Amino acid sequence: MKDSNIVIGFKVMRWVFRTILMILGVIPFSRCSSGYKQKDGKVTFNGKEIGGKGFIVLNESFAKNDTTVYYKERAFEYADVATFVALDEHYAKDKDKAYYCDEYREGQSYYLTKKQTIVTIDNAMPASFESIQNDYARDGRQAYYKGIAFAVKDVASLSVIEGRFLKDKYQVYFEKKPVKNADVNSFRILSSNYASDTNRIYYYGFHNDRYNGIHEVPCNRATFTLLEYPYSKDDRAVFYIYTTIKGADANSFTVIGDEFSKDKHHVYKGTKILKGAEPATFKIPPQADSLSDHF
Image 1 (cartoon, helix red, strand yellow):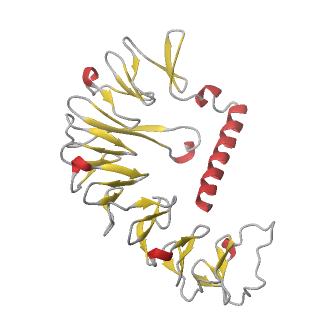
Image 2 (tube, helix red, strand yellow):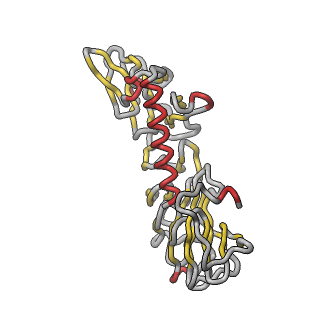
Image 3 (spheres, one colour):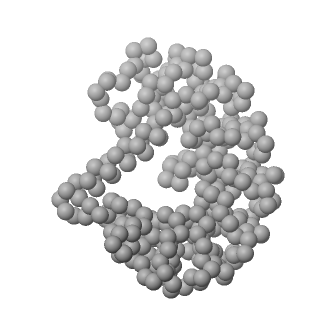
């Protein structure tokens, strides 16, 4: 799918960029290693020496010694070492507090370094606090997404559906928000951007997408079909993302590529008719750069 290809392309470009910098000596090869490494009595994380008396690795993200807790190579000495436990790669707790830890990149050093953030979760109940995976956690009172609390109808029955979707026995949630009218028992993921239940189809986007959040597709659920992203259709209409393409003929509709499509009447760019274009002859030249930027 198109969004998957973009992600893969970005990862390849990032790998090539880092490799060039290593060859030029801008960053050391040791930075490519990940996780805690123990050799010759020394402990390192991404090439940075850490350790100390009583050092133990808790998982790929957390470790501790007799006096200090570590999230990757960053120390946080305010945690209670004796009772500190890692819950997953992001969540941890001690007898007094719960924590959410993550990495981020910024500015000119985006491709070179990662920075760590350690957040003490306000008002969490450490005794009952636990991870339920995919950046979700709960305690005896409420749920958490990336360390931020949000209300749910039934904490005890919470479980992750897939990806960023969560449910309890009464409600489906997308990140921290209820999915309006979603059927708990039949809700499932269709693809990296679409989900469904017995009655509806949903589109969901990522934070950096133009169409982020979750949106209902105004379609006939029974005849809904996914086409090449970002198009779909039912027996009566065609959809771009989650918006109906006005006047498009579902029976003759085909995706051309590069966000262009056509039916027997028109050529479309997204939801707009491309005036003057002939459906029968419109083509994208095989070696052409993206045409989308020119319309």
